[in-house]
Length: 595
Image (tube, rainbow, N blue to C red; front, side, top):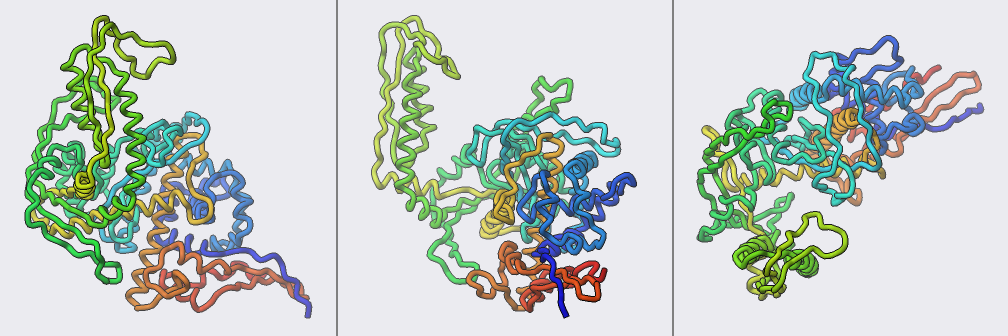
């Protein structure tokens, strides 16, 4: 009997992505917020699912998405025998982004976070905040879709696409900032959004921590974890007002930091470090803890829409009982010593550039020159060299020379003036070691809240949980495939903000897969093939998805004229992997096998 075999269609891991997407509740949430329009062939929730499939296949732009997903058996992936990929045109997907924005992505994200916390029992005792920058190439248009807003929810401002501090080291490109608030329990994002390209981390931290009370049942039991930008007047005022807990790194520019670093280093407590497998390491921590009183005078910023926005509000006096832990890390010192040669070359180049700029500045009197030299020496925080200033008097006036004007024009001085000559002098090995040791020492600080007890050692481990944010940003910029999700090519800020909401949804699925699989494998004392195919219960989502490349559906027809679809690629390893995720292997079964 002759059998005619058709073209195989890929499934891969996309059925698992759609299954987890449904289990998070995002499909149901979007269907409630944006029910299907009878004039449209597909719903907004279906568009979101197609977006997720495109993102997880390595593409996120709207251009020719149907062609790129055409190699997949989308009817099986979407669990819909009548699924028609051609209905998801660029215009329909763009409208999906418009509708998501009109319904306020922040409100949708809040509903999704509440659903995920309940469905997956996510621990919210510690929530970590951080930001990164997303780059743009080309020009952006000003979108206006205000007419889509129904007025039931406050309409958020779209992110401002502008120049700012680039964490990708591309200050020549436009950008937005992207922030996430993730759990320490698997790094699951519970809130995320696009921010202005020049938004500060301190303002963003206050904005994100303010959302905690709408996500968790007991916000007073939540500890907010942030980097050094999180310990500032704006955040501390919010923490006190909301009765939250805060753990952060103390900024080196802070006066309290200098006070604690100048205290004698007596009888530090040494903490041994261990690998994830429990083996002892050579590296260690040395810590000294102190109870301190943080005192700040903070001037709040008025909203730009306020009639008194240009007026300076009164300062707010803040007193925060705190616990500070001074930490020396031998691993950090070892890394700095290993890159000492590169540090020396970098500081020599930087010193030459700084000295050339400072040398060109004239001063009207010796006192001004001495003050400037002292400030410049203090700002020159070099490890391998010292900046030695020499003040000299110059007879005659100073006038700006010919050529391109400076960004900051130099003053013209009619009479005699003073200049400063500089010399970069290498320091001794002893001084260099002392400075490296000081740079390998940092201070962690937390609020002392009534009813909350956490040891100094646990403060270090909890702060190290900031890597969850970094891993999420790495996924965002590298993507689950060979193509990353960044840079963004959409033009209107509103659609960009809606796409960033979908990034958070995709990141939530990515982290929930890893968290669920690891938890079940550890409980069952089993493993899946990891590095070099060795079984491990600590597998990452990337390696987990690499177990599914050969799963596909193969259509064929028999001489009696009947069409069939055969599923191939299912192995015992695949069955165990699906079980570890809590997904029935039946999600791979072809839809409409008999025609």
